[in-house]
Each structure stands twice: as structure tokens, then as C-alpha cells.
Image (cartoon, rainbow, N blue to C red; front, side, top):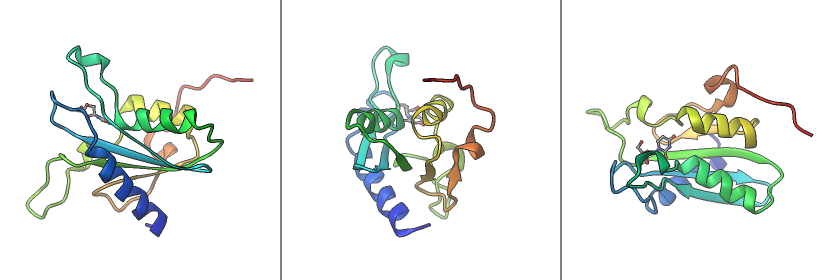
Length: 137
Ligand code: THU
């Protein structure tokens, strides 16, 4: 992992502290590195469960609102993920959900993806090998 990936993970850890997760108690933070700097997001839940949104989508929206033309990378931190005896987070709890993978395909298809607790650097094709895509102008 590069120093900028490690720094982005720290920004995602910090963003997770701003999550609104009173139902799941599972706080997630995300940070995206762009040509206009770093933009963060956290999951925001709702009493009407399916109206909640994920940290990654908040961060990607935040970046889009600042007219970023390229998203270089995204870091995700699930600070409440279950840890094993050695303190390592469960891999299945720290990876982006399917909807967020589809959002990455839309707004950040070439971004590297790192998750707090995994040393591996993913590309979107690792996580979403056959995405649904429409041609656009
Ligand atoms: N969550 C995220 O923020 N990102 C993901 O990729 C997976 C799940 C949130 C949604 C919900 O608020 C909580 O984690 C538990 O599912």
C-alpha cells in the first residue's frame, strides 16, 4: 500500500465517526481521492430501513458535487466490523456492497479501492467483473 492509500484510509476512519447508524450500530466511513482533493462520507441510516445510504455513495456524491473530473482512489473503513482473535477484521464485513460497486462503476471506474483491515489493493474489475453499463454522451 502506498503512503497516499494509507492516508486515505485514515481519512475514512475519521469519516466513520460521523456515521448516523443508530439501527445497525455499524459505522462506515469512506474517503475518495480526486483531482480536487479528498472528499469523505459516512453511512446515514433511516427508520425506514431501505432509505439509508452507504458511506461510499455519500463520499462519491460529495466528490461529484465539487466537480471532480477524476476519482483516483477510494478508502473504506468499517470501524465496527467484527474482529478475530488476532484483531483482524472479517473480510466479508469490510468490502463495499453491491450497490456501491455499481456506483463506483458509474463515477469511479478506474479508482483503486482499499479497505481498512485488508492489505490488498482492489480494482473495480476485481469486485464487479461484468458491470451493467449504458453508453452515455
Ligand atoms: N454500509 C455501508 O455504508 N457501505 C457498504 O458498502 C456496506 C454497508 C452500511 C449500510 C448500513 O448503514 C450499515 O452499513 C449496515 O449494513
